Image 1: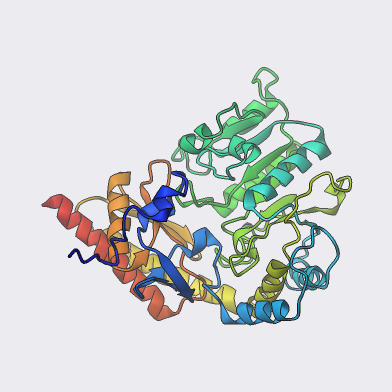
Image 2: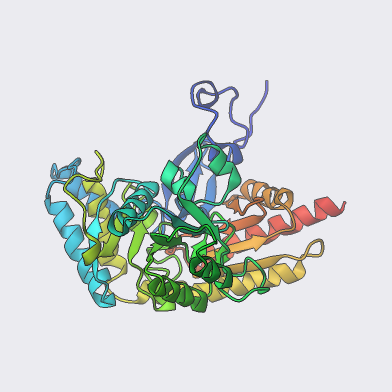
Length: 431
């Protein structure tokens, strides 16, 4: 009789025989998850896993956050509207009023709110369409190692070659420029970009917009300096280009402030939000833009599921619970120092390869010499009960996205497991 480990599920399973080969995360974490609470997921055998993946940044407030869950259950129990397209509902009104009071007005942000559909890539598509509509131009500038989504418009402004190849068609009307530190300081910021804009022989059509992530998550936790972002905003103003900040993964408090661009003191023309805006992992996305850019015709960009009212309910509860004051922001920034110190010690202790760390708030990356080592660290961390994933062009960066609501003990536990995984893989490789 064969006794199967909880880490060795029955094979073949219905996932293998029925579900498409496109699945990915389940290959890295080959268990069947059953329930989740706070910072932990539990498989069907009851084994807990500390979650420093957080739904790829969709669960900033943890799994089944009790405050958000209560609001959702109460709403469903009252037969609240679930599906509403873009009809006016009490749930949408409550969200808009709360978002205005807790996010927009305290920051003096002059934005209209658009519900483009339930996904981040839909928000990006809406932003690109609006920029082109308003300016009458086609080209959009993005950056090396950018990631903006998997639909065609979003892929066109994405840098990752493997993801772009999945499109199966050409991806036009986009031009790449070097991200902050991409050239290791060998060239002044924006020298190439400015020269291309000024030279009528460069072949660069006058761009409608520039789209940027302040921290490139999928690109390898590349952190743009505040002065670089300010320089980019000034460049856009000088050359009449709209500035789009993709805050889908780094917004909603991930870097400390609600928006990741606040530290730089800039006000983008357009902002995209998704992932943790619902707070509960429910599909929801926003496209925010200056009021004078609101030149849409009714229904010009729409979607069947842009009115996910349960997501409005949990989003409102999250804003009420965490963004009425600066408590969560201050706690996140304090924990950033804790993580940075722990990763610094780990980098100094690793005897096999020079590790480097980088991040902001509670998004951090450990860069290894190659993707093989980083993947081995993630596999070992999983065996030890921690969920982390790789990122970067070669999957050479181990990415940490713990819930913002994790306790100090949970944060230390996860960092301790990561350290064990790093040391274990170094020892195995050396042997």
